[in-house]
Structures are given as C-alpha cells and as structure tokens.
Image (spheres, helix red, strand yellow):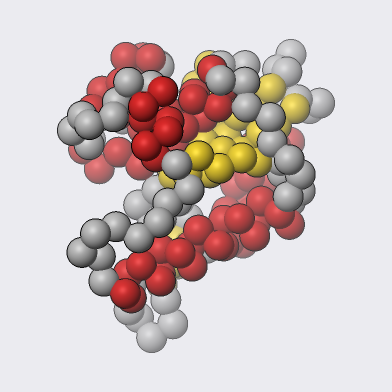
Length: 169
C-alpha cells in the first residue's frame, strides 16, 4: 500500500511532472503543451495537465498527496514576452492544482538545489544526481533534454526528504 505520493513539477514548456511514491520513483510526464493561438510557440495545456494529475492521484487509493512546484521568476536577459509566457504557464499550473484541490508547496530553485548540494554546479548535474538517486529512472533520463524530468524528480525528492506539508489550494 502506498502512503504518500509526492509530485514534483518543473514548470514551463520543457518542464515535467515527476512522481515518487513513498520515496521511490513512480513515473514521469512531460509537461503537456499545445500550440498558442496564432501559431507562435506552445503553452501549458491546463486540461491535459489536469488529466495527468487526476491519473496520478487516483492510482494509489487512499494515499496522501503533495505537489511541489518550482517557484521561478524572470531570468537575467530574458525578454519581456518570454518572461510573461513563462509566468502564464506557472499560473496555469497553480490554477490546475487549485481546481483539483491538491495540497502543494512552492520551492525556489536555489533552495532545493542548495539542500541537495547542487548549487553552483552545471545544469546537467541535476540529471546525473537524479540518475544516481533513482537508478530505475535512468532510462528516462538518458538525454540532455531530459533535464526538466530530472529537476521535477529532484524537486519531489527534496519535498519528501524534508517532509514538506502542503496547504490545500
């Protein structure tokens, strides 16, 4: 019987959702996206994300659930449009969590990376750390572009390891 599901969410178009059950890796979902109106890029598909989360939450009946969303902000030299679009996706994710009444916490990247001793290391070091901590997930973390999956998994691991408790959305 599974007692706790922890859902790590790396927001953005190339982000992902990672699931751990009682501390063990239980799966990935790349962030569902859809074309923007007018054909200019992609954005987070809230309806598809809700379906993913519903499936995750109903798989182990009776398990407590917690989502952990990486709290991100504008990055240096990032354009206004891309900053707005990233914030829009973050808001969609928060809205889906709220609509599904999933308890969640947010964590800044510098916090979870510092706590997992990844601060200041190369971006790809998160993927290496995720493979070392969760070897059963290695086949789904093999490519450099799987960095969103690795971040989501480590965010979930951070919450599980630090015994985070979320508040209902």
